[in-house]
Structures are given as structure tokens and as C-alpha cells.
Length: 265
Image (cartoon, rainbow, N blue to C red; front, side, top):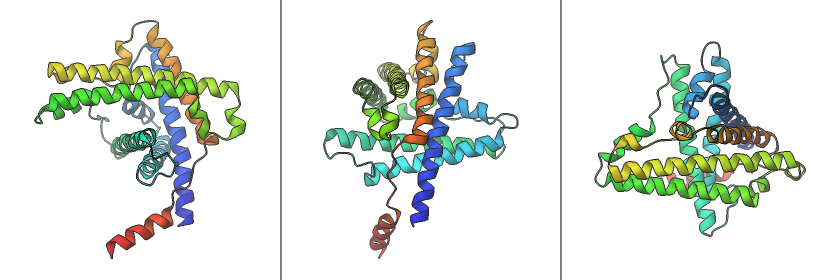
């Protein structure tokens, strides 16, 4: 059980590194040739040509990170508070875990030889929601949640609370502080823009109005697209820093296993 916890911790660190590489790729695309991509597009690029071995490492990392985030949501391993802020952080962890496991699924498809990695776009997701009763209201709620996440990211950047999870010696370095601050501010911009896209799709009842990271980057005009991309590059660097210096509490695998066995009896 202890080995299992250590392995998951190691995979989680790989996951932070994988996330960092994905954001670096997205940022470089925008800054060099104006190409807007989302994480799925970055994964597709990393798997091209002879990149399958590298993509396999990325996949394992994303798997570990996704599982760790879900465990945090379920078992509060990062020791969030019991107030509304703590509950919101755990819900955010659940959402992040699901998103990263979806990226794992897409990466596995590419590793298995899929001709192209086609994830469900924001428009396709919105269309699947619109066919449901009250689907347009659901899109509006999704948009509001994305904006709320964006505001939370802004507050996190201003307060510098992202440093609380780093080892003290790393948290004191100014360049690390600024890479995290600029990174979270850039992500907040993306979340807010995507949120307004989904709200617009909900009011218009048109899935074509929805959009994610790629659409948000396309929507930004010069020089704002470069500025935000530079922030995403900073976030990629900060994610690589987290891979090395983040304080990661081990998942209590033994306790979880005991609880599962008790429920199965």
C-alpha cells in the first residue's frame, strides 16, 4: 500500500510536468505563428512523428495527476477547509481530475494509432447539452461557473496563495512568484472569455457560440493574444516548478482500501 501511494505521488509529479509542457506548447504556438490550440491540440502535436515514447510519458503523468485530483476531491488529501472556499476547491479538484482523465483517453487513442486525435470540441459539448431539457440554462450555468473559476484564479494570483503549496525555499524566489502570478492571471482571462462564450451559447441556444481555450485565444486581438500567451508560458514554467517543489500529501491508499473493503462486507 505504501508503495502504491509513493507511485501515485511520483506520477502526480510527472503530471505537473506534463501539464507544464502542454501549456508551453500552447503558448509557443500563439507567440510564434498565431496558432491557437487547446490541451488536446497540444497533445496531438506532441504525438506526431517519433513522439510516441514521449507521449506515453505525458499520458502516464496526466493519469497520475487526474487520479490525484480526484482523490483530493473525494478524500481531502490536500487538507482544504470545511468552509465554502474549501468545498469549492474540492469541487474544482474533481473537475480538474475529470478533464485530465479525458485528456488521457484522447492520448491513448493516439497511441493506439488513431489517424487523428479528435476530442469533443466546446461546440460539440454544447450541442450535446442543448438537446437536453433546459439545456440552454445548463450552458448559462456552465458559463457562470467558468467565470467564477476565472475570478478565483485572479484572486489566487493577487494573494499569491499558489505559493502555499511549494516548499519554502522555492516559494521565496521572486522569479517563481512571478511565473505563478502571471500564469494564473493568464488562465483567469481564458476562463472568463470561455465563460462568456458559453453564456452567449445558452442565451442564443446556438452551440456554435460556445468556445474553450483555443477559441478564447483566437478571439483575442493583437497584442493581447501574445500577452496572454506569455502568461500561459509562465504558467507552463510554474507547472514544471511544481513538479519539483510542490508539497504533495500522499494519498492514504491503505485507509481507502480499508474503507472500501468495509463497505463491501
